[in-house]
Image (cartoon, rainbow, N blue to C red; front, side):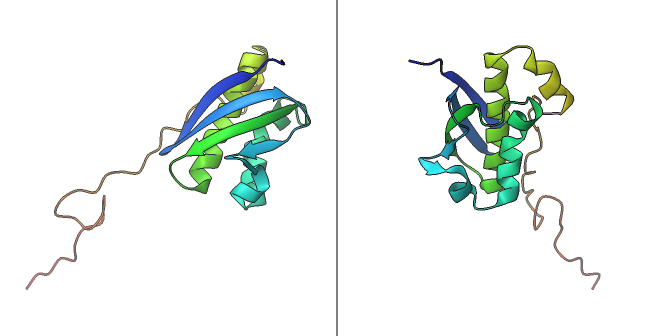
Length: 129
């Protein structure tokens, strides 16, 4: 059996478990073709970014299990997972991926709602009288 490279990516509240294996460049997310799952071409461009930057477009098949969050967060987590798997394939790719900001996990999360307020930062309307 071919070498299988496994990595995990996270973004917001979504987690992507990625399996990378030699192939024709097919991306399968939760047993569906990538474009069918993500519905938007822009998200697929984001997911393919690690391959494009490292000149590996169409060389590896991706089988991913994604859970939590929305489509945008899931695409971001998949992108990070693919980048980490590519680093396991070839350590030399780390420099290129790092230069394009694909190795760093995005730390931004939704701020929690505070009591006595409408949302995290929005307050209830103030009434002077």
